[in-house]
Image (tube, rainbow, N blue to C red; front, side):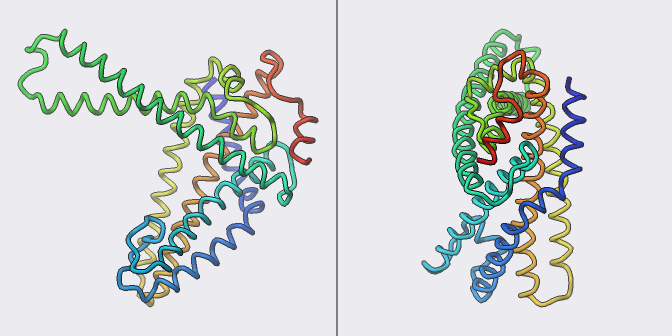
Amino acid sequence: MISSLLDRTLALTFLNLGTLLRVGWPFLAALVALDLYIGVKLFDTRDFMTLSYLSGAPAPSIDEDGLVLLAIFANVSSGFIIATAYLRTLLAGAPVFSLNLLIGSLAVFMKFVTLGFIGLIAAGIGTAVTFILFSILLNLMPDAMIGNDMDAFGYSLGLTIFVGSAFLTLLLAQRFALVLPAAAIGDPLTYRESWHATRGLGASFSMTGLLMCLIAVVFLAILGGLIYGIVSFEISQLSKQLLVVTLAPLGTLVIIVWIFASLHAAQYHFVRENYAARLEFGHDERELDELANG
């Protein structure tokens, strides 16, 4: 099961980078223009630091605070719109520019925020449960087994709690995550239906999601190395700044949308293909096309 889902996810991801760029290029071009504008505006500011307008670093004037908010809003909204257009193209062959794209983007954003709250709750529960279990285990263990190095044991306990809560959060998020691609194409899939549709697939989805996270980290590290190399070139400070403030947000957005939208598309299609009839899940292909195309 894991190998089948993983093969499909990797194939869909690496075969569709061109699709992502094709459906997203207008939004990416607008984002480049905005980043260049902000880079020029902030060039003469002594307090400017690389990517400060994205990280929310203190700006010396109200106007520059407005640029910070504008950049954050543009990057986030562009990410959701491109991800929605990409999912609609992969899953339903829907046209890129339509009113349903904006409706789907807003629906995906709302579902994403809800999943974020679910993830925070799951992380809190996972941390509490793991801490309680290890506290009980610690009280049952003889002192001789723990040894004198309590600091090392405490670090190990903290790491175990962190890993355990993170895995539980990932597991729950993957069980509910079918609502994201469903919202993109207008399929009124509920969280409850997503939970039932992914019964028995939690481990497979979580392992695939973890691997895709690692792939995203690798590509982000490559992007960071590329940016570092550009900064090392003997070019003007303005040119360096404009290249950095353009490549960093643009590259990060493309990588994250490409990897994780592909993951969700593969998971959604996998469930529809293998479990739709048994679980009475969602709509048939003709209905999905009608929903996505209005």
